[in-house]
Image (cartoon, rainbow, N blue to C red; front, side, top):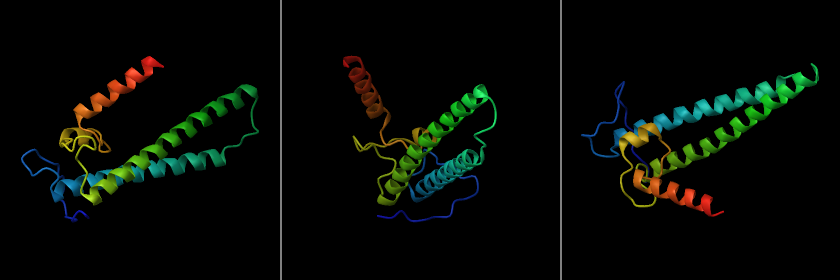
Length: 142
C-alpha cells in the first residue's frame, strides 16, 4: 500500500483531533524523515571530505594523537548516522506499507507526541518500556 501524497499547508502540524495517521499526518512524517535523512547524509559527506583532506603527516606526536582521537570520534559519529539512516529508511518503508505510527509489537498507536519526538519509533511507550526492562535484566544476568 502506498500512502497517497497530499500537499501540506505551510506550517502544518499533526493534531489530536485529526484521524490518526491520516494522509496529511503520513505526508508530514514522510517529509520530516526525508529532511532528517538528507541532513545526516550531508553531515556524513562533510565528515568524509574532512577526513580525506586532512594532512596526516604534520605536527608532533601529541598533535597526531589528538587528530587520531578526533578522527575516531568522527568515524563513530558517522557510524551512528549510518545506523540512523537505516532506521529512517525503515520508517519511510513503513509509511509506504501503511504500517507507520503503529507498534510493531502490539499494533497499538504509537502516538503523535512520541513520533514528533522520535519519528523512527517502532514501539508504543508500553512496549518500549518492556523492551528496555528486558535489556536491563539481560545486562544484569550476564
